[in-house]
Length: 169
Image 1 (spheres, rainbow, N blue to C red):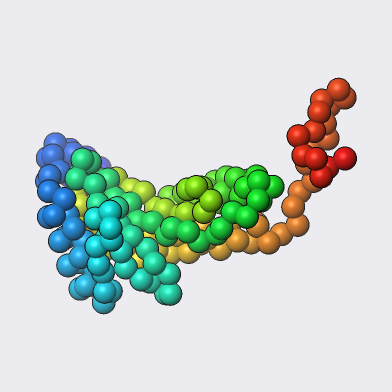
Image 2: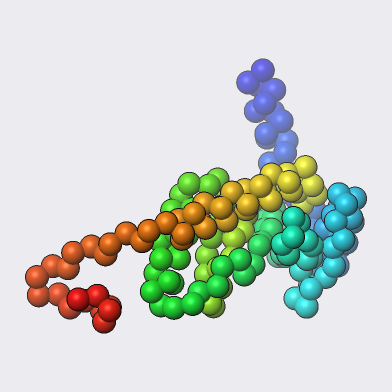
């Protein structure tokens, strides 16, 4: 059995993934999402946007790395102040360490969540798309719970250190 698994692994890894043009990738993602019941469209960047459970997601179209797959939920939490930005960084760090394959990160003054994977073939995203969307939802829920909880007090300053926060005395 182990020998058969190793043989399968070796044969898969020795075959280079199929390279597709940007247009071919867009068509692959658009067609697959339509078959799943979504109504996808191309956004202004050429990525494939679709709605799932009331939120807008996109699949990043990158022909430069045929094994890379990324699905993103942009702009799910606005950043309203520098103090909130610090809490967001903490919540994102906690979320990324708790939820498999999900990344929560800041883009300008918004918070985004993505699942990024390496796939042997680009079309292999089809059977795992729902799992990717569940991971994003779990990450957003974990992040939101963290943000709605009471903030932890800042660590005590060492004697002689200045506190940068003018509201904290």
